[in-house]
Figure 1 (tube, helix red, strand yellow):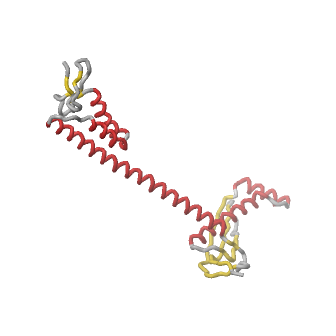
Figure 2 (cartoon, rainbow, N blue to C red):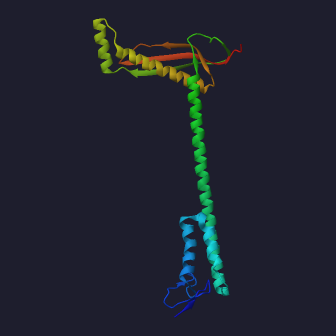
Figure 3 (cartoon, rainbow, N blue to C red):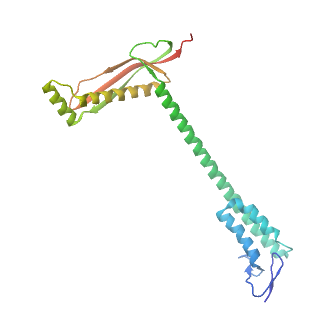
Length: 230
């Protein structure tokens, strides 16, 4: 039996499948083409929200002159779809804002790290108390940093053998160099935190070694310096 599509108004052959207008109105039937346009709106809301306005326009362009009950059901479907679209649009917008916010935070963090690394590289250090061509504008604070390292059995044994033979041991020397570099790095880090750009009077102390332990204490005065104009 032929039916007339409740949406587009076209008469359908009895051999062509027809579909209910909606779950709420199964009595009114629609053609396969209108069903596909209707499902297009539903799919965009589920998988590709940004295409919903275009899909809705295509669907509505085929609505002819429906009877009041059909028009009411179509309006109800459109209202429900619009609400879903608005909700998903806001969710997607918030998600996009969150992505942008995280990217900005990451870039800011990278910039801070780059700035800190630059300050670390630019930090001026001296065992003396001035820099030629620079003047101290502010004495900030006397600071210190400590590093403690275990020498290990191999280094200890090597040092013992070297002591017996009256020779030097590179392993112990390398341990001291590592401890010294670590202490200086910590000292520079503290100076950066104090907004200093130079260290004067840099000095290293080496407390007694016991139980395979090396201790190095670095100390200096954190200062702010500026280039003297010629």
